[in-house]
Length: 125
Image (cartoon, rainbow, N blue to C red; front, top):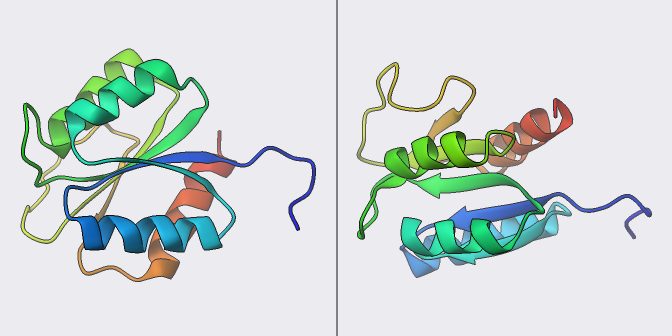
């Protein structure tokens, strides 16, 4: 059982249904409150509606008006307190591609890597 403390709300942004379901299930099992978006446009709409989101876990390679890197930049400019973790199996992230305090975790990743990064970022808040 969870204590009276509020759950950390995470928005998972991933266009691949199977990967998104796995990440959501893994984070939920670790005790986090999860929201889902299939692309950056949907993520922005959710962030505009839900002020309780504390962290965004986003894929970089996504269809739509922006990829995960552009989403991370948009989040940092509009919602500076929100923590960001980006992931990709194809993209080679360079210095400056992500906001300074964002994390990049390459695919394939282990559940423990994601959970550890989420806990580190949100406990520092």
